[in-house]
Length: 140
Image 1 (cartoon, rainbow, N blue to C red):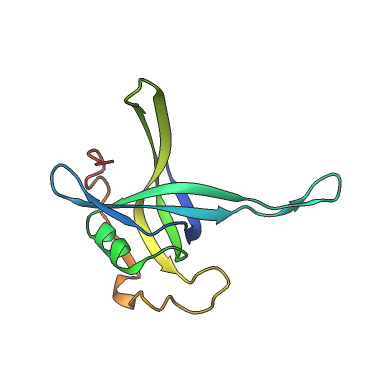
Image 2 (tube, one colour):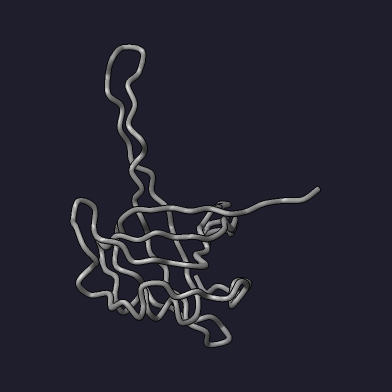
């Protein structure tokens, strides 16, 4: 059976990017984004709004650019795939998470602001990272 793993998210960074390196020395950056849910009105007439939070990891030159130009509150559009990971804590508890592996990150204005972000030059506004670059050997 064929499969599809593709996600596109648009939101704002919840924290500054954190730069790390894989065991092979390739750069990666991790950051969180908040994505507003589409508001709706429930049966009782109450307006329901919400926010979803996602962890994102990007590799290679894209990681360096994200680390250099983005900060908490920056607007981004992330095009990527979901990656499941599981681990065991030092006290034996099992943990798991689903992260977004960003293949393309576009810089956007912060929510409610007009125009391009001041710190993001046009030459870095849309940098593609080849699929699979460093994707199998994260350093968490």
